[in-house]
Image (tube, rainbow, N blue to C red):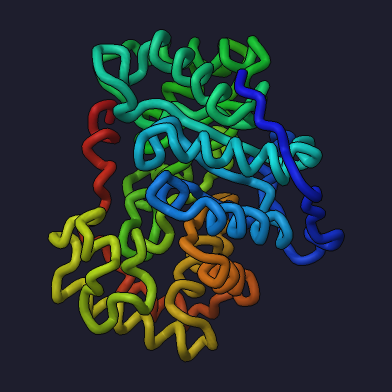
Length: 356
């Protein structure tokens, strides 16, 4: 394991960091998460200034965000986000390890060869070992299978998750982008193994509502299977912000090609502008309303946590403003439903379909 030794005056987080952040439990497990968590998918690779990354993570923890979500292949290059987080952890957060929920995942492409992606035992457990080394950790709090994979027996993938817990390298395990049926199958296996899945991480936003669909939706399934839900991409990769109201900025994800321009149609833009008007009527900006909508009360189907990204402290601060107004009137929800329509942006659906 790498030794990341802090230097200089230690940073001291805010003493009232838990005073304003609400938390939610993942079903009947012991895992409790802040209603907003910080995702490090973008903005924490070697292409971004390290000090900016450090400032964002410090600000997050100062404001009650103690859950940091990572994956083996986040960067660029792949693995660099875990390395950068490990440096920040060593400098600023090691003394607070017992307060943190740190997650990582494996499933998508990581290295060359047949064991560089997928759901094999070899790949999942090797990847977890490498992730721990990159971050300078003894364990992660949550280890996910990052995507379903139809060629490997599901029992093999689930046994690898079970063994990650049994070895002490993960406290809890979860899955991401699994269909409702595959979730039921995976949870059945894990219950037999004595290590139930505690959380599911699907994409979910006002422009991507697949988790609500079907005779037995994924949200219903998660509730029945006693799993929490942490929704990623609640801002539809930035489309549900004021950034695109007047077109595509050159320096945006769409502008630089990180998100396909095929997702951004004239019809989608019309819906985004209408949703922006509704947000302003509520006293929020579009991003805040989009996050609040994901976190809205849906009874047993209520999402546990919204996973947000941030390229700056200012952006994360604005996202936290969503928590000031998570209640919606029936009239507001009806108005939103007119424009919160599936826009064909679920780029992870191909993986979900490998194990329908």
